[in-house]
Length: 225
Image (cartoon, rainbow, N blue to C red; front, side):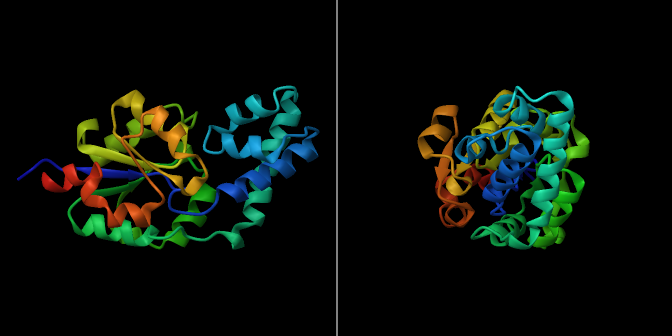
């Protein structure tokens, strides 16, 4: 028997079409907290640790205003939860790769209230081997800690896993721990940027990844599982 292998999935922008809702929520939050930040700049920071995002985009806010912006983002995002939709192929790829013997993990640092909504929408609990969340780390990607925790919960070394994500922060976190990263364009980040950061494979979305799985880094895991 071969050693177990795992596929680690980011959720926002990878499995669930939520990045633009996050960008809109941050835009509203910054405005009410006293900062004007163009939405396009916010979009390019989505997926980054929230505290770092605020410092990067609105570094002039004092601590109280920054905390208010963080709280407001959560409020506005949760208020828009009814607009969340799955990205094409989200449930299908989780189920298919699970059926083919791979350990499937959600490797996200989303806070508990947001993660609960995302998991409910995915409706794939029976195929998940493990899940990480915001309570597991002090800092989100590009800090690689969440990837390390996911590997530990999967019970596999970096060489027996791949990560599927949509942002440069995902790729940087994976590169730091030696996990091959598959980039998807469904979060709105370009192919060139994901490849420049070191993504081993890039495709439109997880539906395309499932169709082309034999050409992707997942194939190596399937061949040896």
